[in-house]
Image 1: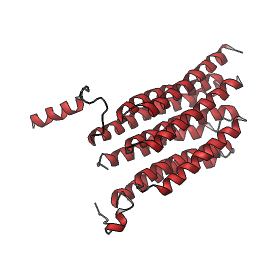
Image 2 (image 1 turned 90 degrees about the vertical axis):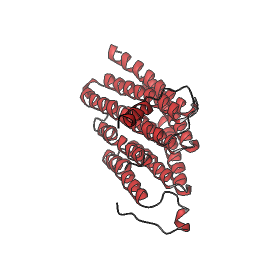
Image 3 (image 1 turned 90 degrees about the horizontal axis):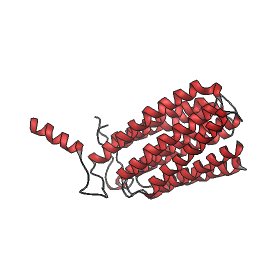
Image 4 (image 1 turned 60 degrees about the horizontal axis):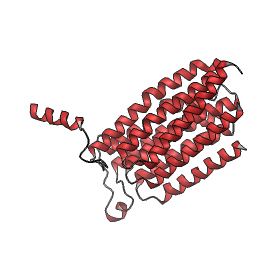
Length: 93
Length: 85
Length: 115
């Protein structure tokens, strides 16, 4: 019973954070939401008894994806609406 | 002994839901990053508890990787907010 | 039931209640510094107590458990310090304005006057 409640809550939170990451106009918040999604996905993989996949998801989803997305946001613009108003300026600093 | 573990898991689920509400409501970027940090900490203890429930020693490695790597994302976001990255 | 299992069960209950109190502080507190104060310390204590409780329940795992506790003990204050510093530099909203003791600003002013 507790397994069903735990898995159901984690899946609902995963779906909610994924929908939030799609609808959000601020790209930084979307990156944080994808980090939360990857955290819950790792716990769900652990419940489904796949520890190697959970290990890979933990290493890639939490650290590597967040760092790469933050560096990409640093080099472009933070808000999604700014893409329409002006050209994306890529700084080569 | 099983009821104590069920109680701990239920309380952890409630804590995760409260942090998720703060992530949804939080007015600034710092609140959302703080919610991510707290969720990572609760997730590490939850993974350790799940590894005791399944009685597998190998599941502790996932918690170890989360303990090592979980704070790097928060530090990168904080340095970006500080405009110092 | 041995004495280790009783101690482990008590630590599990205490740790999970502290995790819940940390999240309740994050939900209830008015501004971001109070949320950092409430959330990080209570969550660190709760996670340490829970993991140590599992280590007492299964005594063969104690070595890796201690390594996880050490990693949590150094990684959680580092991240909360970086976050608090970033929010302080961005001049975030303070609820108890006028009552704070801002040691960081005093050090900055001292450095500026020495230059």
